[in-house]
Length: 459
Image (cartoon, rainbow, N blue to C red; front, top):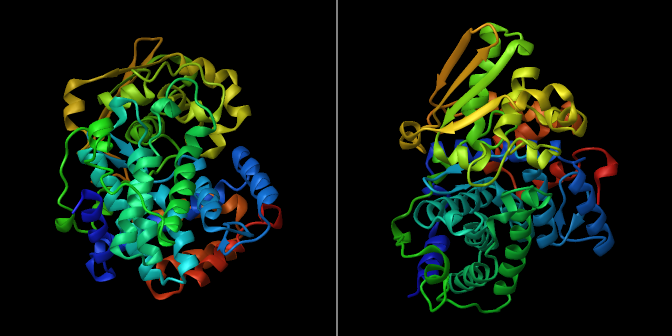
């Protein structure tokens, strides 16, 4: 049996009864969080472009688009995944040498579940399986240092989640995994240097391609079953040697993921909370700040602090701003919050934040790096022109895996993010549906999502 076949056997064996009570609760929070992010993104710039393309290519389909309309499962997966991802406000999983956003799988699993006429229980199991695959491969087979994007492991996760939702047998699931793992190995340049729309669309594109590929496997198309261990396969070409005993895996990886509290790149969350706590406690006169020093773990330094993935003080657009720790820290200190409002072109270009971000200095700490990913530690110091200094240390934030976000806080975030594009009645309906997700049919659930927002967002 190949490694792809072993993984497929594990996927088809998963059952709702395998989920712990804690895992079900966390999955529901992540579903609600994903929908909130999607609703808040309905008027996003690249979302408008995607909507135009889907309208041009397709007028109807069997799967619901969040905000209205329908499309084929693969295009619905692409569009809904883009909605979840665009604000960069969805969840994360932190491995030692890799970071991913497992809720990127939600759009694909939702489309496949609706197509299959699945129950809410089946959606939760399928989503949990996608989380398990992506997070486990992030642990044992990181690819970032070799120049590949985390969507590379995501291809296996989408294949697993979609196959499970469609109810494919082990043979067809193995071929779906093999096709996707062979075809979708993406480059890390997506998230280095000057960032583009593709930062938010790379995983949706994987969702599109891998959902399409799983349907090909459903119809009998075969793939290279030795995708992992074969000649020029994933192990030899990209990941290096690793082992996973899939038969011993559970479905609890979701409890090790973290939900973002602030609209900022994941590794910045504790720093942003620290900045906001300093502002709340001391109400500093920002014009008197001479220097902001941030000491953090090496992964944060390299990705958002100006390390190996490029300087972070030339910020002109959203995609750069939400991956620049200097910008995010400056905006949070000035505005006392970090929400989608802080990423509008007008806010990014204002002189106050552009000036202050130049005063932010980020450096890595060996001591703090050794604590990651178990914790998300940082030290922050504000130095003033008169010689005064205020400082704070953080080890995590509300929403991190060591300090899980409650249902009540998740509801509060959902309401805040989705409010611009969803009425109070629509938000209540979604909250109630997610709370009872294991008791409803997915086609009823997608009807609610399809009615979200104004008619202008329908496809």
